[in-house]
Length: 304
Image (cartoon, rainbow, N blue to C red):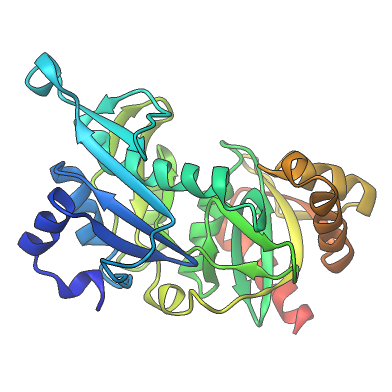
């Protein structure tokens, strides 16, 4: 059964009561929250995701709840804790769905050490994945959303999960996080996109989440092999430009974008080395999304 098989009332009851067992990629999260923004966002964007066995194992136990005391009535806040530990400061209650998304990313990046985890978007075409490592503000998620809207399969907009055993990429297709001007840009670029209610005045400005394509969600168990490592950078009025990187430089930049490279030790070194040996690396500068998609489609065609 999928989330969409629940009525909205039943969804809210599970969230406020025993918890919703939500399967995303290889992980199961038990989510508990009485906050309306969390229920609204999950109902809107997670309808196609499987519900896991309520009595089964959950990788993460997330609790998102309102702050107590006067905060319940005066400027209400949302708090997140994982197994009783609160790693983040509270946020305004109307930011609760964005907090859920950030919390789930944090759970994966801090605990899923069967993978080399990169801060990167990942998209796939013709069986090969393009890995897009980049810091916030580089245009990574905007480019990811544009490619997904033009037929690339979404594996993740935030976390590249690279198996330390096989070197293949495990999908984690979830809503794509966009901010500020990128929200309107993708609304104009995509065909009938579905967005969450915006979270306004966050530390990063206005945040909204774009629904993942149904095909990407259904293929969440289908791994992909690395095709390219591409470091994107948005630059106003720039023509699209791919510049090849030497493998030594690519190794250092991949390692810099890994959440757990040092923690994995020798296994982390081997995983990065295998990746840069398997996938040519490039710097990519772009401004117009149509031109960027054309450049990526050309790469995918050459790979095929």
